[in-house]
Length: 149
Image 1 (cartoon, rainbow, N blue to C red):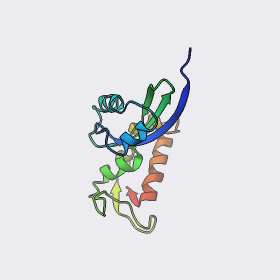
Image 2: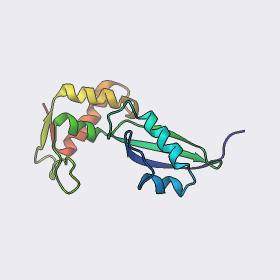
Image 3: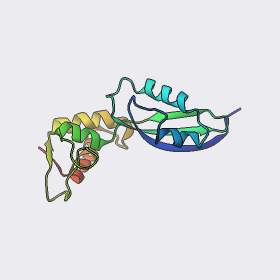
């Protein structure tokens, strides 16, 4: 007999750094998911990824308190900022894109770097080939104020 679906939720958690403190603990606890079991499973699945890379995670939980998780690759903006070598700024000490994209350029990346990002993100993109995946990444770069040379 199939499990009864109770719901789905999405969280963005740094790779290898899931812990029961907010925002992870309260989000899981109010849905009846075993927090420590989730943290151990998530950290085990993301141990080969770069520590601290943001991982969008879709959690499907069932009425019997079990769950499944689908961990996606980090956002394109994360890869673009890393490839451009952008330094942390602002209140939260994170790299930021341009305030006026299209009018100002905050960094540059090469076409080779865009291809590498597209290859890394290929399984999560709605692209059928690498060229169309590169176009998606180019659009993200343009909207962040990153120039591609």
